[in-house]
Every structure is written in structure tokens, then in C-alpha cells.
Length: 146
Image 1 (cartoon, rainbow, N blue to C red):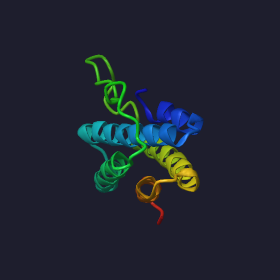
Image 2 (cartoon, helix red, strand yellow):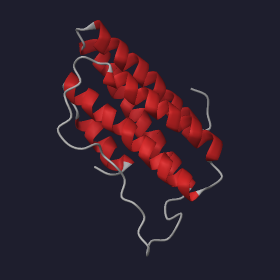
Image 3 (tube, rainbow, N blue to C red):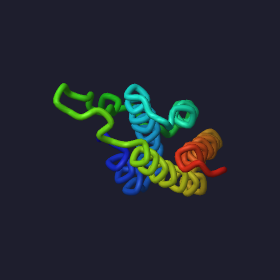
């Protein structure tokens, strides 16, 4: 999984609490990586991206505190690095913002649904906290209040 669309598919397909937590953790990391890559290329979305990167890291860290988060089975997901022949800015800030907003919306929805099935207080708290960070990312990516 290397992009927000792949991460969103995985989030949408997650059913158990452990699957939702694992998919959400990876989605926050994919979001952070995608924003970081765009930030390195520059662009007009700089302030919102910086704040969204922080929210993605905070969401990931909230999920990391959930006792039901399974141990990682694969290396952390990452975006492929730009190669010498690829055009800088091939993904524009509008496309990035839209994909990050859609992914964050899916993550927040799944995490809120997982709160109802979580039997451990720390899992429910992690889901709630991470869902709020996902809402924050969506708000920053769309320019609208949470």
C-alpha cells in the first residue's frame, strides 16, 4: 500500500477492531508520508499541510496506544520516491488535499464505529482520539472547520 487511495480501500474493508486499528494506523502514516513528500516539492498548501502532518502523527500515536492493535507484520508503508524522470508536482495540492480528506473521512467513520465494539476502555479512547485527529486532517485538507 503506497497511496491514500490504497489506504482508503484497506480502511473500508476492515471489519474487526484489530483490522480497523491496523488500517487506521497505516492510513495515518500514509497521510503523513504523502503530505511530507508534497511538502518537499513545495507548494501553496504549506501551512495547512504542516498542521495536517502533525495531526496525522498524533492520530497514529493515539492508535499505537490501543491494546488491540496487532503487532506490525510488514514494514511501515511509504510512498515511492520520485525518480529522475518523473515530473515534479505530478500530484497537485488539490489532488493531494482531496485524497487526504477522503481517507481521513473514512478513517474517522471506521474508528467511530469501532468504539461501539471495543470492550477495552483504552481501545475506545484510542479510537475516539484518533477519529478526532482524522476530523482535523479533513478540515485542514478541505479548508473547512471540523
